[in-house]
Length: 325
Image 1 (tube, helix red, strand yellow):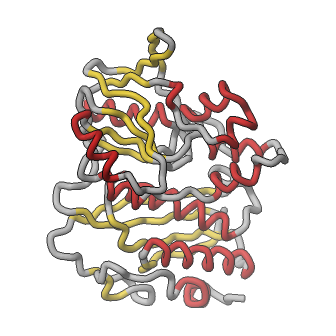
Image 2 (cartoon, rainbow, N blue to C red; image 1 turned 180 degrees about the vertical axis):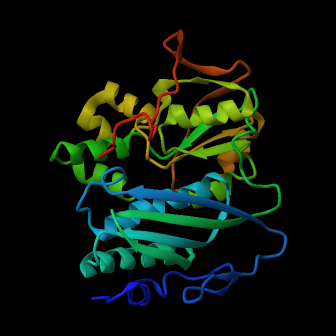
């Protein structure tokens, strides 16, 4: 068992990940990391926090918490079209549990190696279980994907399938068992940051965001920043067979629109570039689906079966919604 903060850091976090960018000069062990930015790159930074009982159930194993925290945090870099470089970690721990810390640190190291990033510093303290990751990545100057670039006529795309994370959470809250449950809970605990997809679409996309609070709410952030609206075809929403088999069409659609925390990408592409986007993604393993089009008039409209109607951009808000778990 680690006897103090410094021993805890040395034992579990002194050598996590690898620096594929060649930018890290000094890492864990000094008061600050020392970073040498690559020539002709912009630094992209984001921070993500998760709290036990809000973002994951109490008594969740360390490896699952690491997967959920890492995937959610690095999804922000994907949304910006950035190449991940390094990260810092702040841990507030209720106690010094060696089994939990070992599982957490091992999984964190696995994911860090997978995405080619290095842990370069952080902090630990005692209190209710709370974890924060600050992620750093590189883009070429003025090439970061923003929320403010969508234009009327652009096509709206999403990656993967939507609503699965909400389905996984519901199985946990209601202690549900069945053939679809392992897949849905995996999607809840192990979001996959769409870094590879983002780098493929970066030359074509005009705006992007990751889906954390629900498709409607996050798409609306793009619409407000770009001063445009959207026409969505609900029947085009990508829904997994597992979710559809468990809850059916209506509930699947609702969760796909408002459930949140799938950490898929929502992005816009000019119609004239859609064929080039398709060619760029021709061998890509992650599904990309067109669900609608940007319009000039602000607001969100649904279109289905010859009928058009307005909808509100519902989603999760930490200060107005009840706790997630």
